[in-house]
Length: 244
Image (cartoon, rainbow, N blue to C red; front, side):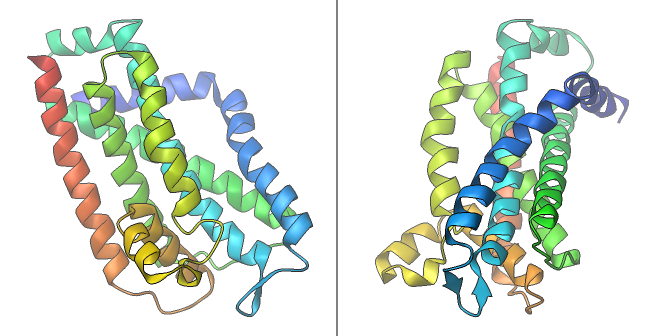
């Protein structure tokens, strides 16, 4: 347990030193989306009986939980390739479970900070959404899944530059196609089936349902929990491989 806390607290100390810059960085994308889509489309576009900004904000929250959780991979890669911190972890009495859990929860913490930033920005733009336990649970499962995936990918890539390629091929497409900016119901059946394979699609659906005070379905939570468990196991295997 002490080893897990050491890993987690190390990441939190790094985050604390960079917190102001981190908050500014986190704010840029959602602010641009709220300004461009909100002011340009918010008054003229309706999604069902709701304004577009009201529809958009839960999607931005789900997207922030994914992108900022996955961003922990960059910190792991920097420590691994430039400061050789992973070699120190190998020499220390740190189990792979402690390493994966500590880094995953560090990514989870970053994700919840980002979601709070998005919610505050939405409040400043006059958007009021419900934030209940189902929203928090869906956000937790989504962030945990992508933080664990980030740990796995950070252990599998061969260079820091490869991490950017993974973000371009995994995170960026999912951010735009996972129900963040438009309802998936408007797509053809084949496209809906394809995009339902994305964890973010289920996170957006569950978070938006709770934000709109609708009864959430059970299936998105089961899928997110399964993804979180699968990605965590993948991270454990990837750390074992990196140790060899």
